[in-house]
Image 1 (cartoon, rainbow, N blue to C red):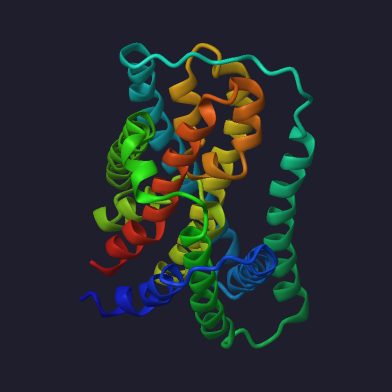
Image 2: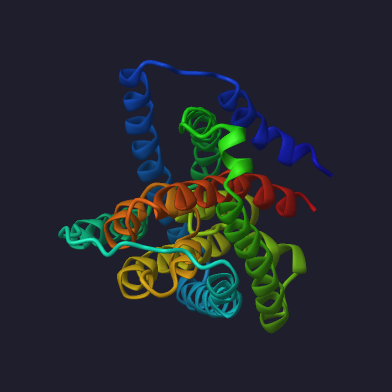
Amino acid sequence: MFSGMLFIFFPLIIGYLIPVKKESVLAFINAQTSRLVLVILALMGLSLAGLDNLGENLSQILLYTLTFFFCISVCNLLVLPLLDKGFPLTTQHGHQQLPKAKMLLESVKLILVVAAGLLAGLLLNMDLSWVDQASEIILLVLLFLIGIQLRNSGMTLKQILLNRQGMMIALVMITTSLIGGLIAAWMLNIPVTHGLAMASGFGWYSLAGILMGDGLGPVYGGAAFLNELMRELIALTMIPALISRYPNTAIGYAGATAMDFTLPVIQNCGGIRCVPIAIVSGFILSLLVPVLMLFFLSL
């Protein structure tokens, strides 16, 4: 039952065991990871082009996306504010200009890559039987590089265990997201394991879309990608507005992106005290995305 999970999870473990100390090597790995993500997203678009009844499937993707986004977000936002009441965090309002437009453009670029793959598949009318196998091979390489990135992110086990607030935020996000996934699965009348897998993306849209697409096909892959991308776009808008009064909520809703993509916004709006909490929370969620998603997909 777990053979498929172990096959895909193995390169992540191997990558995590490799320490890299040279900054130039890490920079190279980061660059290649970004490029591979773009390649797989383009292949996701090609997979969508190969679907029968494309219009019907696109409407299903949107239905899954909106249902999961609503259920998971509501569950997150019902509980995260309780952390702000029970464990308040003092923030400092930043005065730097935030490059939000640039960040939003990066997210739009990813959507355009998927759209370009879809358009190419429709216009060229090519044989797409090779796409799934190519995606699997590139996915294994990508997971290997992601494992190296996680190992060399600068976080030690001691730093994570000593940051109680970051761990609590991550725990709330995991619990409420999975509950939201169960509710969405019930509403959509799909298997519970599919709902739990969809809920395990925690904002990591590229990896979530790739893993779900590889495990359950392009409909689930497209829905997972859009669902997590919507979380990031909302988080970019919500963090400046909420972090002064609800810092735990703002950091938590950012999910896995709190340790990288949305971290500059969190630091500039909430101050330096928010940074270690955001990194710990984001790191735990990032580490658990492939673990939980592959586990639920294997059931």
